[in-house]
Image (cartoon, rainbow, N blue to C red; front, top):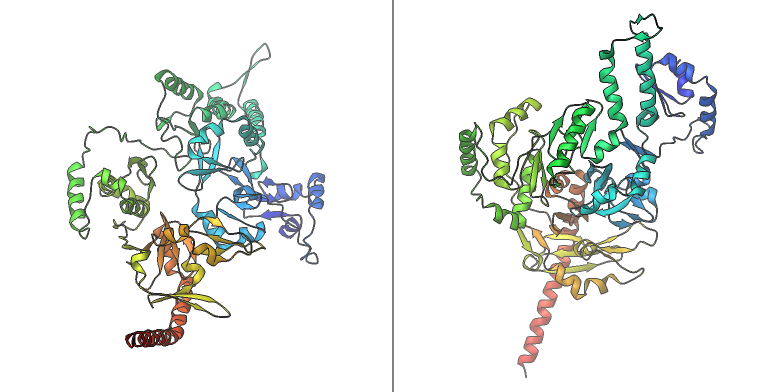
Length: 556
């Protein structure tokens, strides 16, 4: 039975099956056996050609061309990967072969690091950076402040409705119609009392929850545009404007929407949460007279103990923390370690364990993490007791202060740079130049964020005043031994041995532990050992020449 289903393009599980040819979910193996004998299935199966490479093995091509996001909308493959013409929005670089670019390690890493989020008014987008978003419905780059206006655009709404094809190949609108018919059929099968006039009397209360869910399904677009997030799976309604859970019925939802319209506008700072279906208790960070909780004394004691054990770390005021780039980086690292979503632009953070909003500063986050409620919820969600880790304190120096000696070593096979007689890396890595994957192999400067013209001399660019002025100001991380790491831009760290850029220090720490990096560093150290004798001879020769010139001038 299973062999016959597999030949017909049906995936089989222990209970259910799925037809790849028809994109249909099948409840049982018996239903799948009946399905493969139907003429629509045979027609769809014949329309799928065999793979040229595996034609003799009778292997057909898979038709998968996208993903289904949030069990709600179909996203095309190129849109999911951020490809638009010959530019990748996720990697911020040009490409010549889209298939090769999608398979590259850099693109795969960036695809994982960029979060996909679900906002109000049918907004499904990817956070590219702090200022720009990618609309996954229209495949457009937008400024963060324009996402709400874009979600209300007629063209966007039309594309959204067109792509509303959810899992198992079922359309929501078709599903609603089917649900209505099923409800009517169930009502007909229930115990009834036939009246004399031929009418049927049913138990109306039995169908009330189903009818309410059907009405919500019909009005889901209207509710979402009003800021109500509907979760049909667990039957919850959540208002993103005031962060309250509303009863899952049309009457209460519409009443809640009308209350917002009569109470005037509500701040929309939290209109786009990081998770689509989160039930959270919002904390008003503007209220400076908030009442202390029952655990305030315990929290104060925990804070004092944390301050004593923080290796001399000084907790400054919120104003100083917001103004210091180093403190901002520390806040990000602390938030990442303790399951807190950090949002610098809104000056807010969100604890994913307790589902509450906090002020986005180190002091407030530490107070929350050391609280009894946070620890209790953390212990219940994990078997291991979490430890409050201090964020990594990075010590940095400007490049002009860090580099004491610099030598270029040219050969037939490579062009290397020796820094301070300790690090041997490629010249392109030192100057932040990288070669694109396109056919013309164009060179891009990561520091200046420009692509050089084809067949241009890279030395002409790195000697420009603009490049040199930026190069000497780049911070070098000196707190990590035997590594040459620089912060090419704020929050972006460049590994000199691997010529790789990562988007946070936590990711850089993971990279330093991987085998590829260790191999590259080992090769760099080996190159340094083999070239140091020649470098010493070169320095000795230059010293002798300088001494000879001084003696020559002293003769006259």
